[in-house]
Amino acid sequence: MPDRIIIALSGGVDSAVAALLLLQAGHTVEALHMTNWDEDEDGYCTAADDWQAAKAVADALKIPIHRVSFAPQYRAHVFQNFLDEYAAGRTPNPDILCNREVKFGVCLEYATRLGGVALATGHYARLATDASGTHLLRARDLNKDQSYFLQRVPAAALARARFPLGDHLKSDVRSLARDAGLPVYDRPDSTGICFIGERPFKAFLGSYLPATAGDIETLEGHVIGRHDGLMFHTLGQRQGLKIGGSNTGNGQAWYVAGKDMTRNVLRVVQGADHPILQVSHFRTEPVVWLSDAPSAEFECAVQIRHRQTPVAATVHWDPAGAQVLLSSPLRGVAPGQYAAFYQGDQCLGGAVITAPDDAE
Image (cartoon, rainbow, N blue to C red; front, side, top):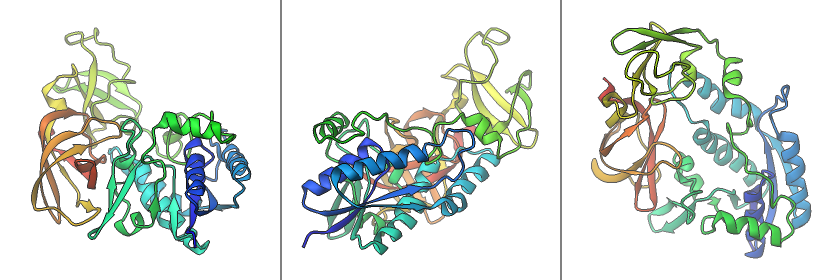
């Protein structure tokens, strides 16, 4: 008897082709469309269009489709953390938390109630199973690989996940959709904050958190400008500072080097190669391992953001957290970011960065 698999059908081409591949593999497939943001006053949330697109795909594939809102759970477990982190001067990644709490949390539970043995998504990632459990691997298409965003999904949830696109190239996915007559084959990929849409970030964040303007200072304490709010900036940032390179200093571009939360001051330096921006080691919160934990000291590759080239590193860890020693420095290592640890194609797990040690 074929497995009944629930596909999280977003209305985009990736999840549509994931559903197509499951059907071609002989599975019984039902679609589940999630709506997780319940405000659309400014027209940036695409929930209505996404629902119509998902229904059109389900009709084309002749599969049932269910609709559910996880907006309360999203606000409580993802969005509130997002706001808290920004208020504390950190740089969060809500997509990672959304995958753990919503897609492979409450959504997986809902899929189980629908009779599904597994929840499939359009993520570009692969899974491998052996006697020790289910392992998360990079996708074949490294340019689209999304294993970084799945680093916090519990191992038990990964065991019930399916990623049909893991062995496919993005260019092939659009071709498959076009050849199958799927109505979303040329629909643009979505970007922006998970489930919220492509709205102006500064105005959006400012509508939830009070922004307090303050001084922009050099490391020597010279005031060279004003910022609109510390939460709008992250370490290593160049754009949006509104201070030209010629008004003071050596004429090079300015970069965010730190935040003084007590004084509400943004600290900046000139030049992308400034020593304070080059981080060679950092510390993390407790690591979440996706399978058996490695030894207390191990070699791996570390990735601190999506599509960042992994850097070889030595990791020392204990239950309180990890210290990561990089083989070559990275710019823009910020508290609140997630570090993912890889050995080959396998993602071992990840942790939230607490401090770049070099900046202390």
